[in-house]
Amino acid sequence: MSIAYTSYVLLLSLLLFLASCDAAQVNTANNHVGHQPRISSSNTTAVEKIKNNATAISADDQTVATNNITTALENKTVVPNSDENITRKEEDEEDDPIDSILSDISSWMKTQQSNNAAQIDEHLFGPPSEQPRILRRPFITLAYAQTLDGMIAAKLPNKTTTTTNMKISSPKSLLLTHKLRNMHDAILVGGSTFEIDEPRLNSRLPKLTTTASLQQPMPIVLDTHLRHLQQILFNTTFPSDSTTLFDDDDDEEETTTIIPTEMSVERIRANNPIICCSKKAAFSFLDLLETFQDHHLQQRKKRSKTSYKIIVYKKIDENDHIEDACMPIKITVHVTHHNKNKKEEDVTQEVTFTLLPCPINERTNSVSLKHAMCQLCDQFEIRSIMVEGGAGILSSFLNEYGGGGGGDDDDDDDDEDNIVRCICVTIAPTVLGGFGLPSLGGLDALMKVKGEKDDEEVPTLKRIDGKFIPLGRDCVFLGRL
Image (tube, rainbow, N blue to C red; front, top):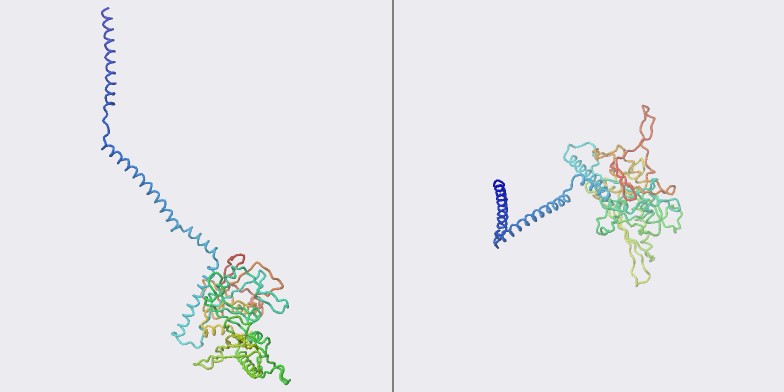
C-alpha cells in the first residue's frame, strides 16, 4: 500500500508541477503583452516622415517612368526611323506630283545654264577657234496636252481651221501648265495658234497670287511670212513682194494689190509679243505700214471716223552694221475712234509688238529655229522658253532632235543639234477621233540604213528617256532630251 500510495503522490506532484509551469508561461506572455511600450509623439513624427519619404520615392519613380515614355514618343515623332522617312517621302511625292515635275525641270535648266557659262568662258579665254560656235541658247521645253488618240485641237465647224481652246486636261493639269509658264522666261506658239485662238500667253495662278504681281513670261510667235499678223490686223494678207498699194476704190485697174481701209488691234491680246519672221517679210511689212499710214493721212482731211498713228523703232548694231537686218523692230500702233458727239471723248486703242527678223531654213522654208532661239537669248536675255504649239511648231522642234536619248547619265547638253531639252506631255483620258488635229502630224520619220546596202532604209524610233507621272485623272509624261 505504501508503495502504491507513494507512486500516486509522485505522479500527482508531477502533474501539479507541470500545471504550474504552464500557468507561469501564460502569465509571462500576458505580462509582455500588457507592458508593451507606447509610441510617443516624437516616434509618431518619425514614422510619418518615413511614410512620406516612401510615398515621395514612389511618386518620383512614377514621374520618371512617365517622362521616359513622353520623351520616347517625342523622339519618335521628331526622329523617325529610315523606313518611315521613305514612306513619308513617297506619300509627299504622291500628294504633290506637280512640285516633283517642276523640281526636275528646274534642275535641268540649271545644268544647261552652267554648261552655257562654261562654253562662254572657254570661248573667251581659250584658244581662238576657226569656226565660231553658237554659244548661248535658251532651255526649250515642249509642253502641251493631248487626248489618248494624240489630238491637241478640235476642228471648227467650217473644218478648214482648228482651235486649241477646247479643254482637254483636268484643272490640276491646267495648274501645272500655268506653273510651267511661270518658271519660264517666255511662251512660244505658232502664227496659226496666235491668229485663231487669240491667246494671252501669260501665267494665271488662281488662289496663289494675282496675275499682276507675277513676273509674266514674254509672248513669242513664229510667223515666217507674217501672214497671220496681217490677217489679224487687216483681215487679209498681201504678197511679200508688193511695192505699190492702192485703195480698192481707186479707178486705176493696172494695180493688182489692194490696201485695206481699216486696221484692227483688238485681236492681239498678248502683251508686247515678239514675232519671229523672215528678213524679207519684216521689211515688206514695214513698207505696208508706211503706205497704209500715208494713205490714211490723206483720208484724214475728209474727217474720217478713225485715225491711225504708227511708230517704228529699229535697233542698230553699232559694232557690226551687217547684222542690222537681224535687229529687233518695235512697232506701236495707236487707233483712235472719233466720236461725232463732242461731249463724248474719243476712244484710243494701242498695241505694241516687236518683229525679230531671222534667217530662213532653206529645207523647210521657215524661220531657222536654231538662229531664232539664239537671237531671242542674245537680244532679249531669254534663257528658257516653253513651246505650247500648235502641231506644226511642235513637230518642227522635235524634227531638230536626233533621237539619241539623253537620260540623266548622258551629259550631252552641249550638243548643238538638239535645241529641245525637255518634253512635258499631259495625256487626258479622252478621245477626239476624226474631229481632232494630231499633235505631231508633221513629224519627219527618222530613217536609218538597214544592212550593207546604202539605198535600203527603214524607219526607226526616236527614243526619249522619261517617266509617266499620274496627275489626278490625267497622266504626265516627263522626258529629258
